[in-house]
Image (cartoon, rainbow, N blue to C red):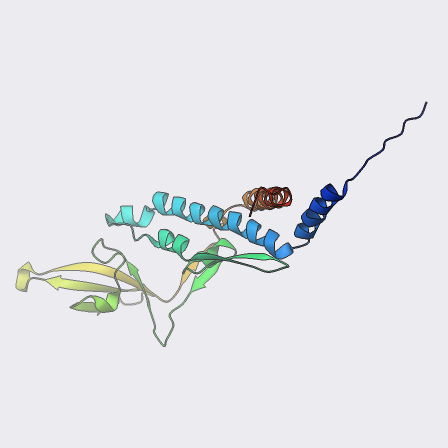
Length: 204
């Protein structure tokens, strides 16, 4: 027993599918759709981090700095015929892909680490009346402020000074590879849906 299948393609239909196929060849358009989904995923991920990671601020009793919320605002997308790129321009985001060692720049000798609620998210050079102290034989130092005079004087230590800070990689700062894969597939699907709608007159 044999069977035959005949497919008839009318001119109008073939023209619409030719438009669809031509659209699929526009990789820049497809990568734009992929990039749009991955951009939204990345921004939402950073906003979630900003709302949940306040360990340092909570330990010091300080107001969170909004560091990762700022990162979400600085996240951008670019695309070409060969790729879609998500860029996060924020200090510290490099930890998502590798270990980081932070050292002083511009000829400075120390990094300033806030250790008090009043110095959290504040630049040390903007704080008035600070004095430097380095315990003998210690690799770290302190910046503090004296309050009062004579026997009633007290010191509030505001910053610990260190030569460098090592931060281990934290891949959770950005979405997982699987999450990006899902977003990319959604972008491709949205682009194909757009082309289908356009080829049948359903999109401008």
